[in-house]
Image (cartoon, rainbow, N blue to C red):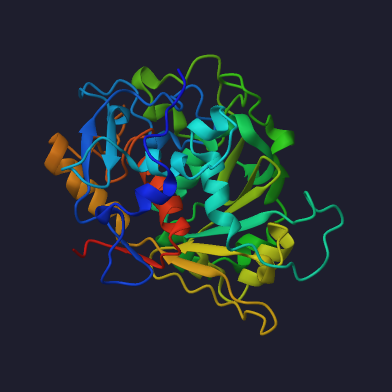
Length: 369
């Protein structure tokens, strides 16, 4: 079914609820809410190759499903969702899956922040280097990173993920405190950032990554009856996105660093040597948890655009509880209404809010009137 853009982007920006006139560089969710529409069908348990087992909602009996609720900027005018706003921003004659899922709109939103690179690229794309967007934060941003990877799996053109033995220490606050933060992690010989191509990059087919990332010793306990999704078996090694990079359409490169504060003076090394990006080439930083990036930005380059996403998850969960009667915390064989929402679910709408906020050059997202 062809998606019809309800308005031009310029017209949609004029809608009062989308922006906060009294605050420069902010976007408001004050009038936002959730409507029941239909299952967005971006991905499911079998096609989401980068979902932590904890976030799956296999066998969830709640109806409607989490993926059938859509977030709208204004409950008094619920015809248009945040996804509609993002799609309306494509400004292209191309009518394809990359447009319908919001990827083309996301790329266009990021283009305005693209800087000149610190060193000339060996093979720039269309005369430009890739756009570099960094997520630095907690598991809330991880869920968004994973939701993007699953929603846009058909357009993954490269990337890296951490792989290693199943007994690699977790990145919990308790473990970090005991082992001197991340210095020992960086020195471990069994920590490898593998190209996605080496761990079966998704190739438009369900279960293409077999087993999917995040398999660990207790993964099966999250699935009903202790069963993995179809056609998948436990992995001998684990895979995680604690440090990760995924590229889309050879244009947008998105990085994720879990709890960046844990790298204690090593963050520039992590970015440069592990994730392959010069910190000076980062165009956008999306952060929460009051992350301290501990990076000295070059005086010759403008610093990245920073967007504080700290309050968004709490706002959307509270509004979903109000409108749907539940915030759809992950429910599966091991978790019951977990603090992390189902995938697909809230994180997918957060993606749309994020890129609309970037389009408006917002630095903070609020509930101000």
